[in-house]
Length: 197
Image (cartoon, rainbow, N blue to C red; front, side, top):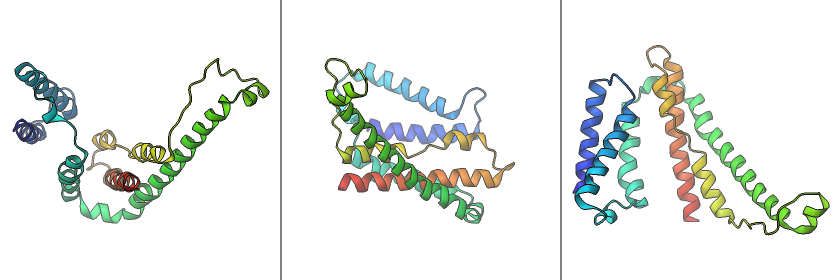
């Protein structure tokens, strides 16, 4: 019940902030402040007894909370400018996301293997590298590396979109906004695909 109340409060608050622009700060800061106040009041009222009701659930997030956000972004976007710049958006949203994923994955895997190689005393002594008396081993599986890098290649464009004015630079705005939406979708699909493997 508290969760539903919080969601309704968020939607009402977001519409009020959209209508009456804040004089100081950004709407994100107001959302964070409201969340902190609500959390503090909830903690004063219930303490730690209701902690499990707010436990993060991956299934609820991906199946119930994220689709309305993505559908809302797609519904409210300027479709004509989006489709006029679809080539640029797909280059940045698809190609660059997969490229970042490949580069991050390779270099993370390479650095972990290099650290394991440095731990062997013969290699360290041959190359004059001091790894200390008891170097800590780094054991990360390839699938975990891929999961981490799938999360890292998702870029958040909220700050960039809030700076660019659509009326002054419609092409730049639509490219940044479209790339952000496509990038998030590709990253989510990458993450869930790797998780299912």
